[in-house]
Image 1 (cartoon, one colour):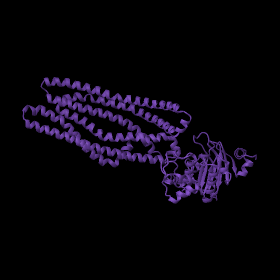
Image 2 (tube, one colour):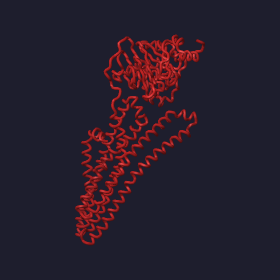
Image 3 (cartoon, helix red, strand yellow):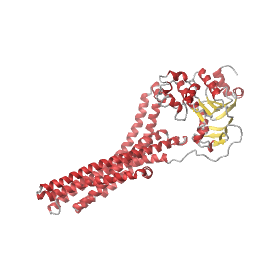
Image 4 (cartoon, one colour):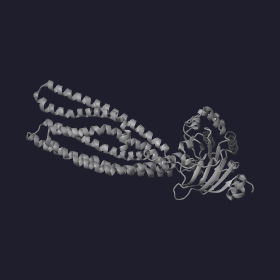
Length: 570
C-alpha cells in the first residue's frame, strides 16, 4: 500500500490538495447548519423578529448550497485522480507482466495475473476514490462534530466521546481479522479465473465430449468456495456496522437521558439538545463511513500487496558477462541440462552444433523435450547446466529483446488475435506491406487469403475460430517468415497441412531463406528427412543425431518411426 501512496499518488498530490481543500470547505458548511439551527431556535425565534429568522434561514440555505456544490466538485476531482492513478497502475502492471520470465509466469500463474490486472486494480481504484471522498469528509465530520458539541454542551459531548474509543478498538480488531480473509478470497478468485480461462479455450472439446454438466459441477464447486470465503470475510466485516451502531445508539440514549435532566435543571436549552441530536446523527454517519472505509481499505490492502508483488518483482534473465564460443558454428548447445521443477530433468546433456543456414530437424514422442529445447534457445528459461551460444556469444550475455529479434517462430499452439490477417502477421513490427504479402505467399496462404471478402484486411475471430487448422498454421508460419529472421523455428507448425502444401512450404523456405538457420520440430519424417542434421529425443535425452541415412542405420527408434510412416523395410 505504501507504494500506491508514495509512487502512484505522488504526481497527483497538488490536485488532491485542491480537492481536499474544497472538500474541507464543503464539510465545514455542513457542520455550520445544525449550529445555526440551534441559534435560531434558542435565540432568534424567541425575539419574534421575522427579518432575523429570514436572515439566519438564508445563511443556512447558503451553507447548504456551498456544501452541496463543493462536495460535488471535490468528488469529481477525486474520481479523476482515482481514474488516472489506476490507469498508471494497470499500465505498469501490464508492462511488468509482459516482461516476466516464463519461470516467473509459472510461479504467479496466468489466472492470478489476470485477476491482479482486473479485480485487484479495481479494488485499489475504489480505495483511492473513497479515500479522497470519505477519507476527508468523515474524519472532519467526526472531529468537527465533537468540537462543536463541546462548545454547545461539554457535559453531553463527554458522554458521547466516552463511546468512541470502544468503536475504534472494534474497527481495528475486525479489520486485522478481515485482511487475511480477503487475501484468501483473491487467491480463490485466481483459481476460478483459471477454470473459466481453460473452459473458454476448450469449449469445443467440452461440447464434443458432452462434458458440459461435468464442467458445470466443477465450476459450481469452485464458485461455492469463492462464495464461502467471501461470505466468511463479509460476515467478519459485517460485524462492524451493528457493533458500531449499538455503541452509538447506547451513547445517544445516554445523551438524551442526561440532556433531559440538564434541560429540567436549566443547564441547557431545547435548541442545543436538538442540535446535539443532529450532530450525533452526523457523527454516527461519519463513524459508519469510516467503517465502510475500513472494508474498502481491507480489500485494497490485500489487492495492493498482490499488485506490488508483481510490479516490484526482480528482473529475471538479465545479461551476464560470460565467455563466448570460438568457432565457425552459429548455434551451439554445449552439454545442456534443464528441469522445470528442479527435481527431475526435462533435458539431459544435450549437445549439437549448427552452422549458419543449416537445418536441424527434431523428432520425438510427446513430452520428449522438443519445445523445451526451443524455449532454452530463446532464453525463456535459463539452463541449469551447460551453455548455449548464438553467433559465438553466450545467450546469457545477450539482451533478451535483441536475442529474440533474431528469431521467427511458429509455435505448436500459437495465438491468433481478433484482428485482420495483415495485423496478425505484422504484429506491430516495422514491416512493409510487401513483407507481409511475400510472407503470405511463402507460407502458401495466398489462395485462402484472397478468398476472404477483404483479403488480408479480413478480420479473424479470436483464436482464429473462423479458420481451419491448416489455415491457422499458415498464418502463423507467415508471421514467423515476415521479418526475414536469422533463425526460423517451426514447432510442429505444419501438422495440419497436407503433404503437398507441406512440401511446397519447405521448398519456399529453402528458396527464399537459404541463409536462415532453420529448426523444425515435427512428427512427420517427411518434414525433416532432408535436414542437414536430425535429432531424436526421448525422455529429454538425445538418442540419435545425424542425417536421415545415418539415423536409419544407427538409431532403432528413428528407423521404427520411418518404417511406420514411410513404409518399407530398412
